[in-house]
Length: 243
Image (cartoon, rainbow, N blue to C red; front, side, top):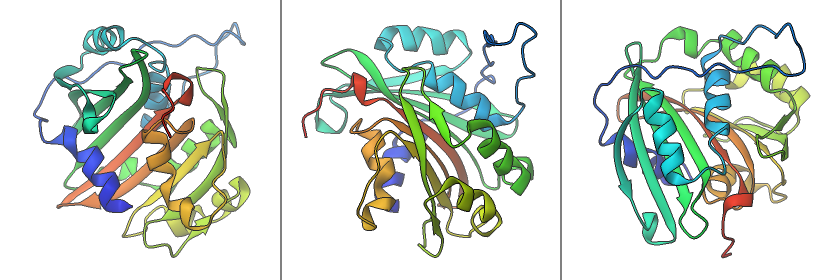
């Protein structure tokens, strides 16, 4: 599982250099005229940005991201030899490199999956502390509603060495200190469907990245002398189902 995840995620990283830091678009809180204070948590901010791209046409998403300061790298049609198109972008966040991957269903010309990735030889502690992850959980909550209107429930938090797995939101919060700094890394997932087989708990990323279900995952990983923090969001509404 980990090898498959890295093969997909690191395709875009091969092209990354340096560019200006993408800005974050302002967001309006329609429910509160006084507008709640927006979270400063990096991942919470990126979740809002990439979530808003779901369902957009490829060129519209590309134009929007370039307007935010992302440097467009390339488009690979028939990504993976199928009916998908991959758009890759690069940026920086302080001393960290960033990559954005936008995957489009070329039949529908709709974005169905977006992944943001932050990486460096060693991530700043601000992005890996227990408080940082607690804030992510508090902001996203047990049920996260995508911009598409799909409600995605927390499914699990799991370390890649399989030593820790918690499949309820309350258990994840209670045991976050046992998971967040695991030397093998971890992943947590929110989806609109539940995988029932225990072994399948490792494969939420693959189901999401293929658009087979809707939801979000957050991943912390290590590979080739780099430390990675990423978040991916998917909507099966915009994917031609061929499975």
